[in-house]
Length: 285
Image (cartoon, rainbow, N blue to C red):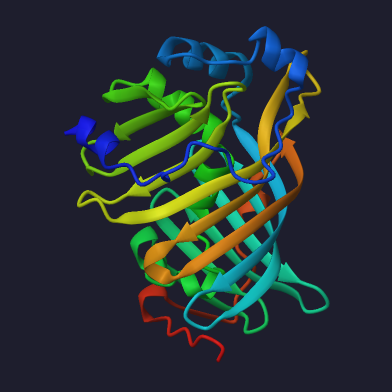
């Protein structure tokens, strides 16, 4: 069944990279093969060398959301905070308005807070999935997985679930995995010459595309307590076909191990609290 995923992959009909792809690895490294990957073993070895599993991460990004049905767009600044084993916060703001919303995730529970209204909505991740328009079409966990794409790929290659790695043309490896027990399909298109993920696709069990991420630029992040540098994505586009939405993200700053505290994941004090499933979000015309 997993091989069929490879056969019907919709990662594009061309093996050329996206226009303007920026790699942090220079020609000397690529030419000597120090960064290159040939198969599953060399890809996993490369990921173990440079993709750590951060227990904490903080980032700020400029976000542009384009709506296919309305032909318009929206923009805001997003700040993401994550701490193991599963605390996640996504905040949105816009100048000169200020803070717009905060989404806090702990396990399967979600708290969504709107600053201007002083309202808090509480529910589950499934409830939030039906209300993504209220937070700029961004799923907090999908966004975090897109940011930590090298780490997610390493985790699957090191795991026990079946993973297939195949050559795709002269320039790429295609990695396919199926998540158990959900049956969700995951695919990564990896550049052979520098080992970076160029594209990631997630599909539901029936094959319908849930999200597609195209990476445009990586930069090296210098760990203050380590001798090596880690490639992190700084420009990428996230597409949600079912919603007709494309989200363009431009990360302006990363911090790994920023020293997050419990206070970082406390929701603002709300004037009113409601069930998230009762939220009615009216899109701007």
